[in-house]
Picture 1 (tube, rainbow, N blue to C red):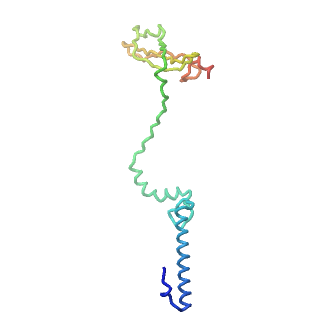
Picture 2 (cartoon, rainbow, N blue to C red):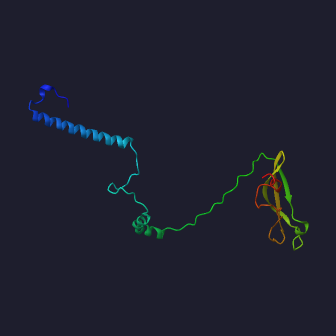
Length: 180
């Protein structure tokens, strides 16, 4: 709004009106500039979806459910409820580079003979591993429990007993407990 002095009116009242208008415009631009700077660089807070209500909607789940309930009720009738499957966590296996010692646990001789008189046949085995620390040596003891069944009468399979442990399903062998 630059103007040459020749183009300004000579009337002091008109000059005062022009000056007041210019000051008003400057004040308006300064306020607009401050607002934009505040939006750009100022503190920010959570935004509300309703500008008329400065309070955020707190604890209104019941109201939301009531609003959605008529629509969802029709859909729920058609849907089948599927029970969630519970996944059990598994341990990571002991490192493969550790030396392993296999200990085979067999059934006692009197349990290898079936009630029908036939000898039971080996059909499988169950394995478990324990970590054993010998001073200056670490190794894995692999327990193999043989499972037997009678092929003639097809009786229930029998598995050799586990060796007793201080803590069931623990990796450390009893020799390791003093170290822990």
